[in-house]
Length: 454
Figure (cartoon, rainbow, N blue to C red):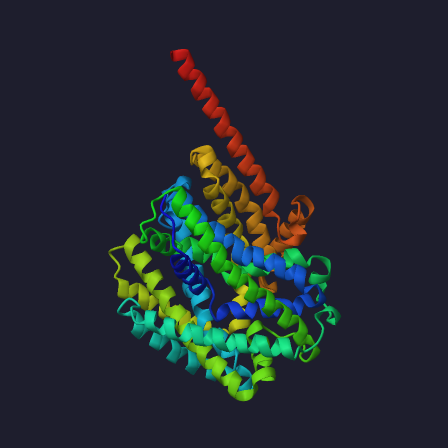
C-alpha cells in the first residue's frame, strides 16, 4: 500500500490549512472569547468541534463515498434535493453571506477611524474598489490568486503570531476573572459549538473539499481506504493547526475584556487588540494584509460559484454568473458586518444540521451500502426542527411576529434541546436509526427471498 512521504503530508496539511483558515476566521473566536469570558475554555472546545472536526468529517465523507462534491454526496436523496441543497450552500458561501463578508471583515478592522456618519460612505467606496478588483481578477478564473496567496497568507500569519507572542509576554489580564454573557454562564460548550457555524467551514468542505481529495490522488494514492487514511492524517494535522489558533484567539478575546467592553462584532474586537499590542502602524498593516487575503478568498469563492453554476446551467455564461455574484455581494456588503452576521445566523442554524446529517450518513455509508433510505430518514427528520432552530435565531423583525412566537412556543414545549439551539439533534438521530432499521429489515428480507428461491 503506497503511503505519503513526510513532505507530502505537510504539503496536503498546508493546503487544508490554507483553504480553511483566512482573515475572516479571526473574528468569530475573538468575539466568542469576549462573550464567554471566564468560561472561554468550554466555549472554545465547542467552537473547535464545529469549526474544525465537522469540516474534517466532511472531507472524509467525500473520500468514503467518492462523491465529487455537494451534489454527489446528496445524490442519494434525489437529484432535485441534491440540486436544491447545492444552490442553497453556494448562495450562502457566495453572494448572500460569505463573499460580502470578505469585504466587511477587513473594513471592520479600521472602520472606527471614521465617524459614525462617514462609515457608510467609507464602506461603499471600499467595497466598490474591493469587488471591482475581485471581478477583474476573476475574469481569468482566478489564476492570479495562487501567487498572491502563497506570498501574503504567510505574511498575514507571521503578523498574527507576533501578536500572539506579545500577548503571551504581556497578557491583558487573567481570563478567569472576566465576566461571561448570560448565555455563556448556562451553556458555554453548546453556544461555542453554534458559534462555530459562522466559520462556514463545514459547508465549504462539502463544496470545495474535492480539491483536497484530488491533491492526495495526485500523489498516486489509490482510491478507497488509502485515500481516506491519508486524508484523515493530513486533515488532522491541518485542522490541529487551525484549532490551536482558535484556542489562542478565544483566550485573547476573553482577556481583552480587561481593557475593552464587549464589541459589536469580532472585527472591531480584533482591531482593538491589534492596536493595543502593535499600535497604529501594526493595526494598519494588519488591516492591509487582511484586505488582500480576504480579496484572495473572495476571488476563490466567486470563481467557484460561477464555475459550478455554469456547469449546472450551461446556457448561462461563466461571466454572467460572475457579474451577478460580484454585484449582489457588493450590495449586501454595504449593510455592514454586524447585519450580515445577524441575518446569516438563522440560515446557518437551518443548513448546518442538514449538512451534519448528510456528512454522518456519508461517513457511515459503508455500513448500509449507501442505501438512500437511511439518508432520507436522517435528513428529512432533521429538516423541520432545523427550521424551528433557524426561526429562533432570526432577527427580531421575524422572531417577534405572532406566527413566529406561536411556532417557537410549540417548539420549546415539544422539541428536546430546543432551548440550546439543538432541536434537530434527537430527530436526526431517530431518523438515522429508523432508516438503518429499515435497511437491515430489507437486507434480511432479501436474503430470505434468495434462500427460498434456492
